[in-house]
Length: 371
Image (cartoon, rainbow, N blue to C red):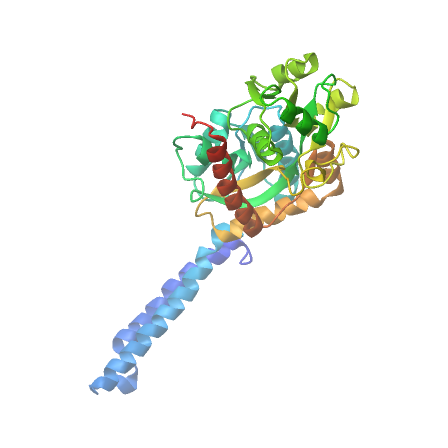
């Protein structure tokens, strides 16, 4: 069956044939020159020849552009991979599967979540950086993507130049929690307690240089307090330690800690976002006691550098439409996310600002570089 001329591939093939045919015709005329210009006429003949060469170049350029648009016009025509650089079953993976399912419906192609865990998200990001820039490999990462340059001695990619930020999917809230036996029921009381006994209080963390660790370091600087870090290998070990009173406080993802707060096993002191969370509406923000403090996390889509602009915009538009759906909004909010769907330009500006911010945080907190 012959493709319809309206189909992008058909248009591209027809444009190429037209370019060859018309280019050949114009080229022949350019070589012969118009009838009135065949006799030698000095500089006038050179001028006519130049005019025909300019016309030839213009026509060929226009026709070639028509043929070159085919990849973007035909996108997507095969499965798309969304690389999640963390294990299946976590908060990042859960969001990826919600958004990917919606994209699959709207794009008409399989959108497959692929977990590439390891090195705090670096392994998955590296796989995307080295993928073809054709829109068929998308990185979904946290603000750890902006932290990596500050915390690692070296990276296998250039964080700012090897990726194009497509859209911030969501803002993610974290919450400052305490063991209920701690004599502090608010941020103000925690600060007073810490200042009364510098270095006596402690906090739990789940990884050197991850976003939760750096948020606590930002809080310590903003509050002017000194509390000691105790490392744990993941929330599965940290949360029981908090409940048992082995550690005094911690900053944890809001989506996973709500049952422990509602059950009275932990006390929520404040959320770190700019506004109160819909999941914990009665818990104040840190900024209500420390004006200007805001340390919300995020998750976003990135594609390899040199991905065509039309494809970047297609991914953005389809993703924004998916996030705008009422059922998507409800599911995202239920797991502690605030839907965003920012433009590529807005996300690029935020991403670059966060890279600079975290470099300063790591430097001032004297956190050693990791291998």
